[in-house]
Length: 293
Image (cartoon, one colour):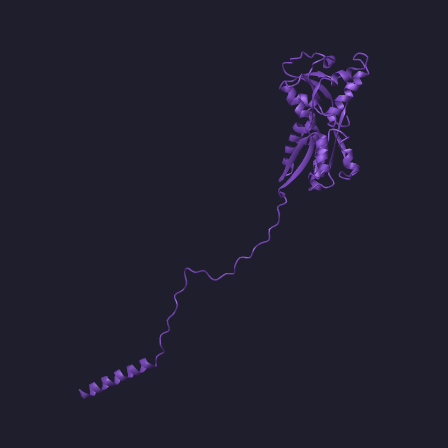
């Protein structure tokens, strides 16, 4: 019995000795299952402007009032062909626009109803010499209110005493052309040498552009007026009397990019579009004739 007890004690002692000598267990980290491996911050990629869309830009066009309808359509077509471009028009009498340009008004293109208001810009180097080109022609005719209260039937009736005639100011191309026509008619014995004097005595107002003349005659503020054929076509309720070719004056319309144009390349492109087949087709729809028929 003692021998067994001694043997058991010896075995316990050896077990304790082996346990003390064994290396301690090392805890192991659980494998990561949710956090991704560390990555570098994303690098910004340089952007390149798209070649299909240009940066927004506004092209400013100063144009004679008689071009309002035609250039409105040309502007829309030009915008459609040039994404990002907005065409901004300033329509007025050519003489008014000339003064504004001379005073420094910012504009890219000028389209006048005559050379008289374009030539000073060439002389003053505001338009490059040789850059102005005729793009259309026009004629003039007499307009009457829809109800024709003065019962104007012929050109001779313009000289009737008491008739209320509305013209453009002589400084405006249409006003100048109208007076040339009256002077031409006065050379014909059919009308008499004093015809122009009698007609001009009936003028009750001289307006700044043809659109004002059309509006006033259409509203019955005048018994008659003289405007471009294209303006009469644009207001079909007006009555008209044609002016024969031997008295009439052909109005030549020049256009040019301005030397100080904020957008010179775009200005040249607009002028080119007006002169193109597409631009000329739009002008024809509005009653204009080609510059070089």
